[in-house]
Length: 312
Image 1 (cartoon, one colour):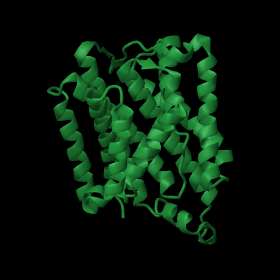
Image 2 (cartoon, rainbow, N blue to C red):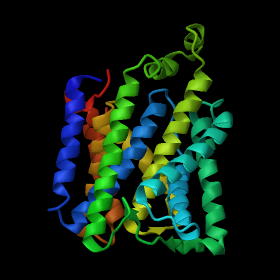
Image 3 (cartoon, rainbow, N blue to C red):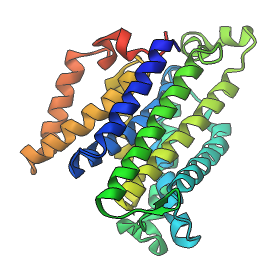
């Protein structure tokens, strides 16, 4: 990644953190959720570059939320940083285990198999009375660096944590995409057999990127769960996975900036549609997003490649 890209990500983080003391609660909520979903999209970018569409990342998003919530309730651990780390590790471990199976599939089989695992988790949580069934359960307010959080201060602190996690992940992925290993993904999409002749193992590479992607989705789920203070099985529903896929499609293949921008655009359109037409907000949302796709068939990355590309 170039020095200019380093500085641009650092500048984004400074702007996001600077907005925390002044932005209203609704804006903090919108930005925090958008950044968390952008974190999921960043992880999915690794797989999309290899031509794989993961239609079940709600599995890890949901696992992360429940891992953070259950750790807080059952173990009494309230430190937000540790809860996010535990959630990412739990989701990454599950992704690593599933990866041994899913890495052997491509195309529609990869997408449907990933969705099947997500729906299994959704069904289990829906029937689990001890975990609140369809209502889920509330998560107590966490602490940050051992300091208790309450009221608006809690929203601002958790928003800042989400911004730091998203920008740190964006930096790490951008650096990875500049390495020789990070450049193998597009080659797998074009000709997997030749990649094998070059000495790389496509299945192993996909396995590693799938694990990292799952861990990032788990962290995002934990961040949203801590911010909202609630988890429920809907986090693992197929429509949640579809939302992540749509963010990836809206972003295109432009890389880091496009993924973050697409998540923000989706959340803004969602909020405006619900405010303008509470009854028909899904129609407004779908129509607006359809127009965006028709206008930018290559995704938001087509707006300005110099700004949206973090890697060639």
